[in-house]
Length: 275
Image 1 (spheres, rainbow, N blue to C red):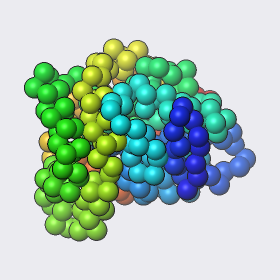
Image 2: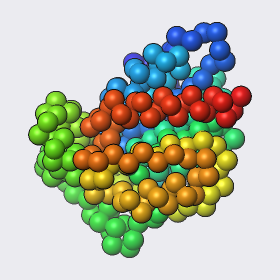
Image 3: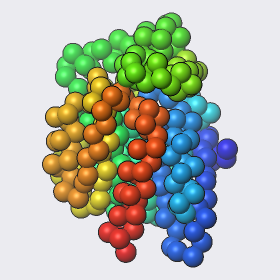
């Protein structure tokens, strides 16, 4: 684990160097979802680094071992934190990947820093804004987390994060997901929910991108629908959709072998696309 001081916070991150030193350095930046931390990407970070890529995996503002900031954290702030981290590391262009809220932060990064993107991975996410009811619910949950903490919330959310078959067949994954949620700082999680409720629609952002993209969604995800997945595939002209049966909201942990295979194929395609 390394640290970088930027934009008034201390960011904790992992920096895995690829082994392919003969080619131009290629970098993958992975963005975790809510209410998780960078450990959710461990299976992907190791596999991609072994394939010769440098992989940067930070804890977002308010999560994991990064500074907790109260109030409201917008997706713009998250995206600019990531750009600041890349600046500190003297990294220019990257492939950016995110899951759930992390996918929406990746879309915000594309809105603000499109010139730095070589490719985009969107897992278990969607570009649409919340309904008025959805925004109200996020704000209510934010207040609840600050009052009650994360324990009960984590237990309630687990069956929505993983499919029933994954919880039964993969108890170590279920415990990892539950632990991340229970350990997430309530103040930072609440701040992210408030900011996420105010996000912009990302359909126009995706429609304007001319980069390769990979979309991965499970068919038992209660948050990202098949229509969401197909819409992203349609908007991103150079995209591939991987639809995983029997998988919930955490495809990278529920089906790591299939997820990694799709990711590595995608990364090879970005090399050809950007050469």
